[in-house]
Length: 217
Image 1: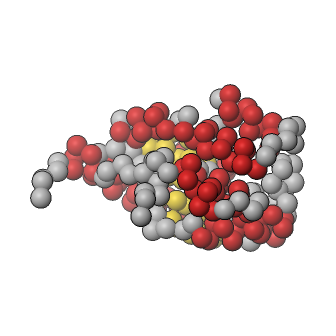
Image 2 (image 1 turned 90 degrees about the horizontal axis):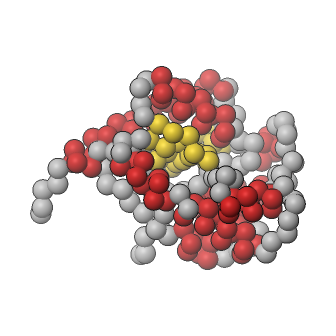
């Protein structure tokens, strides 16, 4: 077997936050990035959809109920929005920068499947995107999430729909996932996340290959 210099594989970690709407992903990802920066870790905060791109602007209009699109069309736009960033994502990781990403492919598949699309069809456009090193799923019951401020301002923030999304999320779990109780205090969640993320970043810095999502079986 060929010897591999693992130090040559040293890179940043791809850390993804997932969860229902209003589960605390955005605030916790921001807190995590601040913590890592204070520790001197090269890190950037990313978010999908990236609404700064042309594709992202189309998605933004759809989410704000300013346009109507077929379910398959919007799913493919969400996927295209991630593909727009794939080359830059890999470059950042290989340069040693860790990425903390608010939503990724799992959201796309769970939300579209909850609308009635076939889950395998939903996963297909995501195949070949970079696989996360760690998925932090903030577990909050849909009823609790619906009680939080601002709920209902975007298209998907409807309780019954979010219940369906939760069911599909559970089907997408893999060994990279860590389920974190999103009903803990902000500080309690933060403490759990710091330990998980620090270990993940250390593993990637020691040398870990970049892999792709959902390789063919």
